[in-house]
Amino acid sequence: MPQTIIRASVVETTLGITFQIGELPTQQVGAVIVTNRNVPIYTITTSAAASVDAESISVTATPVLLDAGVKLNFAGTIVTLSNAAPAGSTTLQTLPLLSSVGNAVSATTKALVFVAGCTDATVSPEIKNIDTTNYLSGVGMEKVTTGNSKKMQLNFNLIYGDRGGNILRRIAYDKVYVGREFYFSLLFPSGEAHEGIALLESASPTQQVQDKRSFSCNAQVQGDTYIYTAPASVNIF
Image (cartoon, rainbow, N blue to C red; front, side):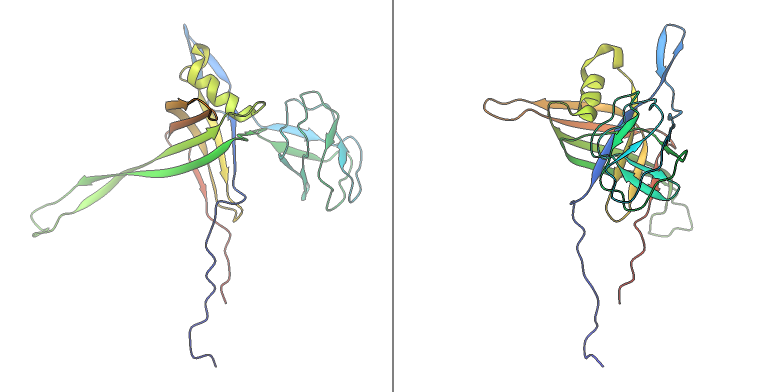
């Protein structure tokens, strides 16, 4: 028997994190354009079977652009796009398939795009506690939690062709997009995920001489749209 406690200790890192965002549809209310929070879901259907190790699949014309890195689940087979596919594409370039994909099999996707230049995407709880101290509390204080909103800090470098970064820039600068909300998905290698609809609250671009251009943003996650997925369980022997 060991004379000390044996326990694994592996520190989590930021390696392998991905951050994606997507534009939301809008609707006209009088003279005002407002965001519709119904997140679009698109269906992709194969038009031919594909074998193991294939690096492309044939599909019916895609209804929307699919970014490189997007994962599609065709009846349990995960297909990862190696290149972006414009709307109307009938062939998707993929990483080598780990298992075969059948004909006329469908996958659904939100068609989010990656923020390629993202260097920080941190979701922080903003907990609201209200004082409920009463005559029975003695010298102590009591509180009750009445709110737990989420704030998000974003930092990203400006990169040509960065689709996600361009969405954030439009919301920050373009008067047509002022007040638009966006959908986000922050995914960790452990399976932990943060998703929801957010509203940009501030944006601070930097462009010092002889330096890279970058953006720092703050966003408010809207209402009850936030979804948290805990990391996968790990057995520590």
